[in-house]
Image 1 (tube, one colour):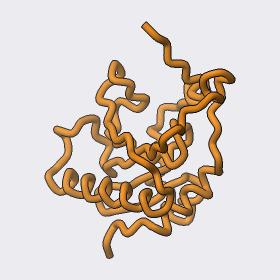
Image 2 (image 1 turned 45 degrees about the vertical axis):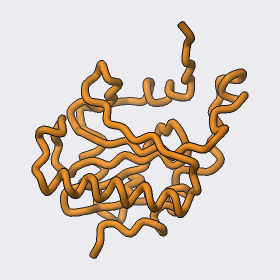
Image 3 (image 1 turned 60 degrees about the horizontal axis):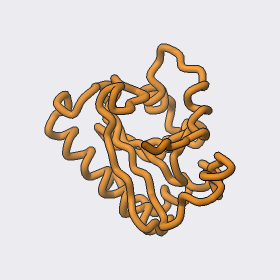
Image 4 (image 1 turned 45 degrees about the horizontal axis):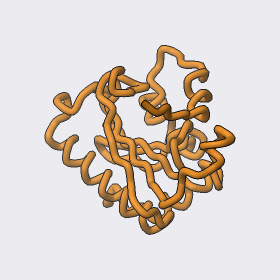
Length: 164
């Protein structure tokens, strides 16, 4: 059995985690603070935020505004808006970042890798051919070619969601 080393994740593991939900806190912050909270978009029932501890450049999380732990807890309108947001974010990332593909996923429960178990969110991770390279394999270092703020700006200008 091989081992997958992800030493860049130690920042997330060691980050101070209070009793508050960072997703809820991000959404509750006034829109004027979106640059600081890394909120990318705000819909009626769903919002998106850049992942502070990304697996790859452009790693976004899309979450319902309501603090719910599972897909079964979503109302039909929340499900619809979540899927619309997911599609819009993928299209915006295609246009702004030019990835070769995407990893899209939901971690339901701690055993599935959920870092935030009680607030459902969808991970959208753009991928490029060769984005795993010798730096990660030999130096246990992930190279992020630009800041979260710069990537957020690129995606935001290509994002046409929510429709107004």
